[in-house]
Length: 302
Length: 306
Figure (cartoon, rainbow over the protein chains, first blue to last red):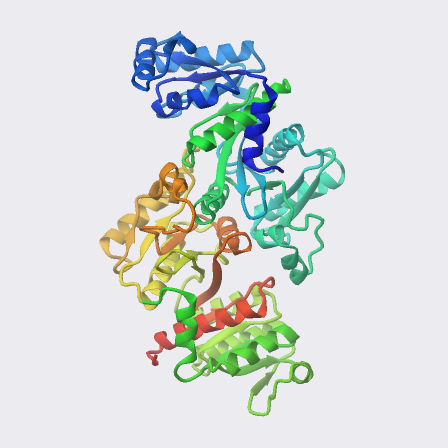
């Protein structure tokens, strides 16, 4: 997969600007980014209009450029934003501010609540040494996914990967070891997913599992362990055993490897960008770029 | 204080070689590792396995076994039992796994710990030498407990803090990793963290500090951290110990040396000395490094100099 900067370039080149609905729009960090986001999206700010205008003015941003939908109550602002997004399937939702008000509203909304079982937060990791990026899922939504959840996560991530660029994504179902051990659920789940892929239950893709991280990353490690893997250390998607291992994985890559991260929730009616502990302005821009590219294709994740 | 693996290697080369019980040494690369470690002055090997095979492989790697003690064992569990028995009887200072399933070695360690009423559980510490960091870090438990509960985590943490103190860190900083921002927020995991922190604050693990932060992102707010570019790779306040929530996370993190610019060495602590469990994907250079770590830990445990 291409580097994260490549997605930003592609989104800027596309010239297509979907609606980016920000709610609640009370996050100065988000508002500060608006001029950078504008070449690839059309922002709509939902929240307390007076406060938004004041913040925009404080940030020296021309208030006339941005559509503001007045809703002083944070909870209702999120509900309003979801209603707007449901009317425009090519929109993008972006959560601002403290807490998780938009996610809470999405989980309660009658049109989106049931879709959470298929949703997955995908993190893109930019690997400067290999000059490529890869996806890690799920990094937020399902704390301890069972096999059924993992099937849904995989389907969602595959759909995103295919729409972005990779027609035959290479997936590793990570586990603590490369053997099936009935006492370690991640190894059993990974084996099942791999067998399902072999039977084309996920379409045109390669899913290897269980594999431990050394075999997933290195052909030499596979050779030493006498594992035959078609991945050859060239993985597009890391399906992690759970959110704890997923977040630990990406945080070590970002902190010890200085790898850039960005992400979004897929599997809901529109892409949803939520604040993550790894957020940087360039990461948020990349999240918006990827979401824009997905929305350009009129993806209905549901 | 031992700050990096070069320091470990230098210390390992000094002083008297320690006795290393090598379990199932019938593979060329493994026996070559033992030979290198012996030639470096780290160890006096004791080999356990099929004598005939060991002698044949030794010839292939030009390893003169005339002064090396060999214990003949054919069954793999018997090989593990013999090696761990030598360690627990004080006839060896370290044990190291060769071409034998890891579970056989763990089973034998747990059996011997029970016999002496020693440790109730064992854990693997994976140490990292991180360029830019001014100290080693350890990740635990990276190899034994699949989904440890609070009591097991307490033992894992005590073990790790003890190891880091042995390596010269008087009050290790500990980060108990868990996910943040999830919908259910992994209540069990963060619950364990607050209890372990309370235990640490009470002094249950000796001098150490369990951090409030559950992720590196809390220590290094991304924006500022990621803006540091070029050669400045300093990691201020980096914890000494990272405790993972379960085996899946431990295994994934510990072997990130396959993608990150870090070096890894692992060991299992027992009541009678360290046991080295190399990964099957490790090169012989990496395993020699693990032996050096084991040598230093064994000497310090037994009060040997240096």
